[in-house]
Structure formats: C-alpha cells, structure tokens
Amino acid sequence: MSCPATESNLGFEISYKPTDRQASLAAMNKWLDQPDAHMIPVVAAAYDSSTAIEFDPDVIGATVDLLAELADLAGGGRANAAEFAIGTGRIGLPLAARGVAVHGIDASEPMLAQLKAKPGADAIGTTVGDMTETAVGDDFALVYLVYNTIMNLRSQDAQVACFVNAARHLRPGGRFVIETMVPELRRLSQGETILPFDVSPHHLGFDEYVDFAEQILVSHHYHLASDGTARNSAPAFRYVWPSELDLMARLAGLELESRWGDWDRSPFTGDSTKHVSVWRKPG
Ligand SMILES: C[S@@+](CC[C@H](N)C(=O)[O-])C[C@H]1O[C@@H](n2cnc3c(N)ncnc32)[C@H](O)[C@@H]1O
Image 1 (cartoon, rainbow, N blue to C red):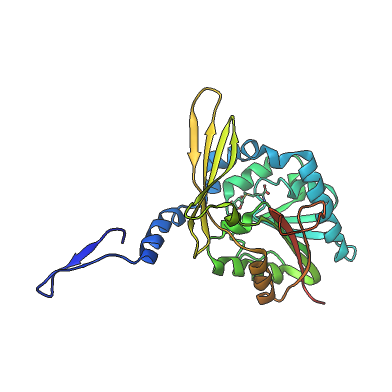
Image 2 (cartoon, rainbow, N blue to C red):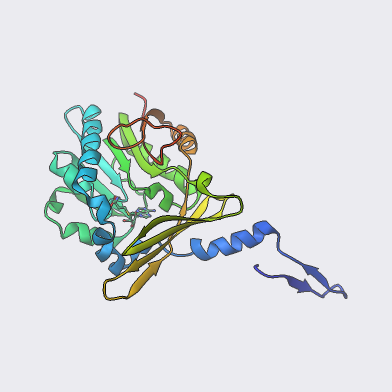
C-alpha cells in the first residue's frame, strides 16, 4: 500500500493512510523483489571488467595469502576450503593454485560458466546452489565469503542461515571468514539517505539507505562507456554490523577469533571502513 485508500462498506467513508512503516516496506519491496543481477548472463560476462579494481594482483595476493594460511591452520595436511558465492573464481582460482582444494557454491550458473572457462578451473569443484542451505561437505578447514557478499542476503534470517550453513561445513577447529564493509551511516547528515561511493570518469556510484529498520541499502551504479552510452543498475543489499555478525556466529556455534581492518591484518578500529573477520568452530 503506497497511497491513501478508502473503505465505504460501513455506510460512511473512512480514509486512512498507511503507516510510515507500511509505506517504507512497500517502497523497499520494489528493490527486494529484484533477483540478484549476477543471474543475468551479460552481467556475469561483464563481472571481471566491471570490478577490475578487485582483480588488482595486490588485492588478490593479500586475500589469498591469509586464506591459504587459515586453510593450513586447521588443515592437518588437508588444506581445503569451501567458497560461498565463488562467482567467476576471482579468489577461488588463485587459492587453488596455492595448493588448497577449493569447492565453490554459487547461485548463478552464468557466473560459474565464466569461472569454468578460465585456466585452472579443472582444479575447482563447483555447485549451483544457495549458500544459505546448499551443503557440499562437512570436513572443511575453511569456509569463506568475501567482497561484501554476506550483504547479498537481504534479510537477517538469511544471513543467520548462511552462518549455520558455514558452521555445518567446518571440521572442529575450522574457520569461517567474512570480508565486508562497515555500514557508513555516520557519513549521512541528518535526514539524508544518499552517499556517493565512486565518482570517476566511467562510473558513478551512490548508496541509498532506503530502510534503516531492516538495514536495506540500494547501490545505484551508472557505468559510462567511451562511446557515450550509459548502463545503470540498482542492486539491493542488507547491510550488517560487525557485532551483529558476531551474534549470528554465536547462534551457529562459532567463536570470534580475529577481526582485522583488511587482509593485511591491519588493526580494526572505530575508523575502519571494512573488516575481515574470522570465527572458529570449537574443537
Ligand atoms: C559480488 S559477487 C562476488 C563473487 C566472488 N566471490 C568475488 O569475490 O569476486 C556476488 C556473488 O554472489 C552470488 N550470490 C548471490 N546470492 C547468493 C546466494 N544466496 N547463494 C549463493 N551465491 C549467491 C552471485 O551469484 C555472485 O556470483
């Protein structure tokens, strides 16, 4: 319900307005009803070029260094890892090249098709499925979910289910690692909802905080091609606080082991804009 409605079956007219909350939920559904854009073949085909900054060798090197070390820690000679939402294999492929046995789950067949076309893909197992429920084993040293993708799960229940599913995959002593942003609400002035996160010649990006109660933001992207054409997308996410993730981990029987500000193990502080967190399964 997004506009005032009337009822007249009582013999007189009652005019009522939806509460602010109802109006907000209705507006939000417009965003939440959209399927994840990575299911679309052209989006999957453009993924690597549209996220080029994340493919910087230094970014990948630091990520893989830490993940390989964590897979070894609980590996007992069998360093293996399950990647939730592996996508086109940005991290899974180089981690496998380090000798870690990687199995990736992703909901998008087009993203997995991109992965499978790359050199080294034969070394990786893949399963099409939802990371909140798909199981591919129960003896992994490491499960990891990077690049803000916990936020692709757009409800608290789905995020909790993801933790429970990760814990289910781990052997005792195994680790679950998440890399995600810290919500930037404090950058918003009173009454404002929109924050630019990238204003560069070929891309304009704005996060719109559409629902503070359900923790939903919409990232508006405008990609500007050199021929003058533009493409836009507006995926919705559920942002989540580090402390809330710790509670989800507890619900799944995991304990916080480390939290860093980045893959280089820099300290996590009140000024950190992202975190790399490690929860351990006791045992
Ligand atoms: C931003 S990409 C990240 C891909 C890869 N991990 C990387 O770092 O480049 C997000 C990925 O999450 C996948 N995804 C979204 N929701 C999912 C779900 N519920 N279960 C499994 N995969 C999901 C998408 O298909 C997409 O491949």
